[in-house]
Amino acid sequence: MVEESVARNTVAGGVDPEEPLYMIGVAAKLCDLHPQTLRTYERLGLIRPARGPNGNRMYSQADIERLRQIQRLTQELGVNLAGVEVILNLLDKMEKMRQEMEAEIQRMRRLVEEQARRLENYSNSSTR
Image (cartoon, rainbow, N blue to C red; front, side, top):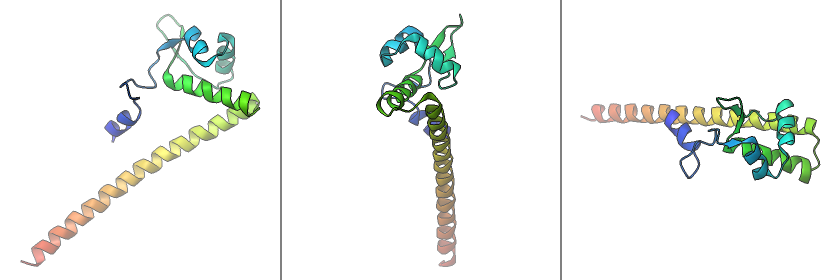
């Protein structure tokens, strides 16, 4: 199950989307934002970049996608930052629930397969 999670969390190039890759200047350019905007988003808790060995902010591909999502919400939909925080928190909770549900479905699927094997073994042994 951990292997499935790791496989699902890698992009086509095989890079973990949570791996910190970009310094703040690069992340800002990728999102067409000012670096100070990224610092503000971090201060508000909307984004949590990793810190490099020298304390520099390091952004992952997942962080870049989150920044783009914030940008869409604020610029295209006119949501204020307080609203963005609520939306992102709800989306995070929904994703966690989706993952938990998926894990439960897998668990139930394994139980059904195990019961089917037991029933088949019982059926085969009783017909002899």
